[in-house]
Image 1 (cartoon, rainbow over the protein chains, first blue to last red):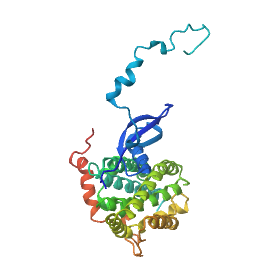
Image 2: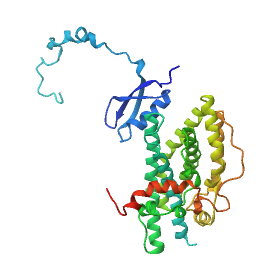
Image 3: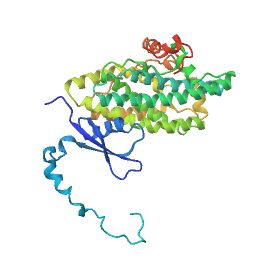
Image 4: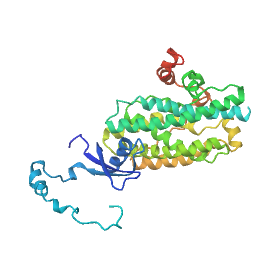
Length: 94
Length: 260
């Protein structure tokens, strides 16, 4: 067994934020202590109202080497942005 | 003893206990077993320091009422010798290893939480306000140190043995947390102080529950340090307090009035 505690990724929802944002990572032996450590490490300055902790090993990430294959095709497809429609005058907040 | 004389002593006891334990916890800075725990211990210390400041500020105001001149929180913290300190002996005990620190914290936090919740009902509005604010922070401290005692107790054979030894060693220092002398009695009578002896039973119940979950044995000794009105709260301390104050007060002693 490794003596290293597993790594956790910490997400905090701030006072006015709608979504949890990734703030960093930390070590903890289990989920309960990951949340507790996150409280101490990342919310000392009144940053948050909610904490998520996710085991780093459980995050499935895209492969940087496949970046072109994944993202290149959308570069030249500007018609996918909804910017080609004349807006009626009465519509606000767009 | 007038009401204000007793109140001055009582607020000093509350403030000194917080300040001394905060200083002990600050000794862990850079020495925590992992950085997350290093930060957590320091957070608890800073909470206690903030609470200690509120108590000592209030003590200074009461002193002004009694003597015409009251000392500031800084004068009280940095310019009093050990014999004038009124903290319980438990909190001046050395950090030892992580189990020693957590056992000390566990005993103290559980008593502290009960004390603050009682003081939140104090007839003295200032005491009630400070206690209500502090109780929120201390609820977290109490949960955290109990959790660590369970983890160490039902962890490895070594962590179990170490935390059991720490709990046994510190046990005789817990009696003082529930003692009441003339100062307490004047203020309990007035509805200002918490009835500390009445907190012993709920404290013991919590300690028993946590130690059972941690597969640890409840310390059995009946004899307690600081009995007969000769404990830290009356200014009688162990040899450890002097060393702690030497370090904590060095700067103000060597460079009086220094600010930065």
